[in-house]
Amino acid sequence: VTDHDLHTLTGAYAADALDPVDRDVFERHLETCDSCRAEVRELQATTARLAVGVSATPPAALRDRVLAEVGRTRQLSPHGDVVRLEQRRNRPWYRQPATAAAAVLLVVAIGLGGLAVQENRQKADAERLAERITAVAVDPQRTIDTVPVAHGGTGTVVAADGIAIFHGSDLPRLRDGRAYQLWRISGQESQSAGVLGRGGELTGVVTDLGPGDAVGVTVEPAAGSSQPTSDPVFLVRPA
Amino acid sequence: MSPTTPAADGTMTRMALRRASRGPDLDAGPATLDDLLHQVARGDSAAFELLYDRIAGSVFGVIRRVLRDPAQSEEVAQEVLVEVWRTATRFDADRGSASTWIHTMAHRRAIDRVRSAQASHDREERVALRDHVPAFDEVVDTIETRLEQEQVRRCVQGLTDLQRESVTLAYYGGHTYQQVAELLEVPLGTVKTRMRDGLIRLRDCLGVMA
Image (cartoon, rainbow over all chains, first blue to last red):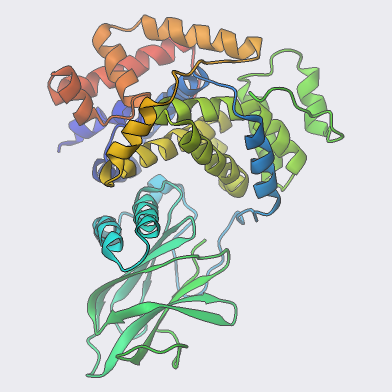
C-alpha cells in the first residue's frame, strides 16, 4: 500500500469502514501524516453530523440506568501513574508508538479471540470474552505500554475496558521446571492469569482489571503457583 | 434527545444557566457541549445529566441505525454514555469537538459490535431476530434536531449516487469499504475515493468546522 493509497483512506476511516487490520495500518500512517490528521478531524466532525441527523428518542429507562451506572463508576485520572521504568502513555492514540510488538499483539489478540471461544467455559461467556479481547486490540482508547523484562526481553501490555493483553517478546528461556506466570495485582492481592510458558514469545490475557490494578509476571514452578513466590520481573499499571 | 428532563430537578448548575442564556441554540453548539464535557471531566454529575440530555438521542439514534436491534442498541448506547463519563478526563479539544469525540466513539462501538457479531456463529440468529423488529421511526422531539435532520438529509441528497451509496452503506450500514465495493459492484479504489469526496462534499454542505 502506498502513501497515496493510505491518504485516500481518510474517508473510509472517518466512516469506520476499515477492518481492524486496515484501521491499525492507517492509524500508524496518521502518526506521521499531519495533513491526513487534519482531514480525518474534519471528516469525523462531518460523520458526527450524520449521527445527529438520525437522532431518535431513547427509551426513558436508559437515562436512569446510565445515571445509576455513572454514580458507581470511577472516572479515569487524566494521567496514568508510572509503576517503573519509562513507559509511554497518555499520548493521543495516533501518536502512540507503533511498536512491532503492538502490531504483533493485534494479530495475537484476534487469534486469542478465536481461542477463547474454544475454552472450557460457558459458550456465551467465551464469546463475550472473545469479543472483548478483539475490542481491546482495536479500541482507540487502548493503552500500550512496552517495558523491558528484568532479566531480558520486553513485555507489552495493551489494555482497554478492564482487559489487558500481555505479550512477552524474546524472554530468556527458563531452566527446566520453571515458567513465567501472569498476574492481576490489585493492591496486596494477586490473582493468577495463568502460566505463560518457559520463554520466547508468550501471550496471556488478564480480565477484570480494575482501575489502579497492575499486570505482573513472575517466575514460578512450571505448574504455576496460587500466589507469587518471587518478585515480578515485569510490572505495568495500565493507565 | 430524551423526552424532557431536567435540569430543573434541582441540579441547575452554572453551566445550565449559561446554556439557558444562550437561548434556543441548544442543539449542536460545539462550544457549549465542550464546556459541559469539561465540567464532566471534573466529576460534575449535574453537568453529565445536561450532557446526557443533549447527546443521548443522537448517540442512541446512530447506534440503532447501524445495529437495528433495539435491545442491543440500548445496551451499546449505555456502554458508550457511561464511557463518556468515565473517560471525559481524556478528552482533548485539540483533536476535535466534544460532539465529534462522542459520536465517533458511539459509531465505533456500534461498528465493533457489528463486526464481532459477524465473526460469531449466532449471526444468523441475530438477523432472524432483526426481522421481527418493526421498522423504526425517527421520532425526535426538538425543533433543533428536526432542522438538523432536514439539513443532513438535504446535503446527503445533494451527493452523486455513488457518493451517497458509498457513504451511507459504510456509515449507516456498517459495511467495510471492501464490502461496499462488492455490494455496488465497483472497484475498490472507486469506493475509497467516493467515500472521501462524498464526505468532503458533505462537510462543505453542512458547514462543518473541525
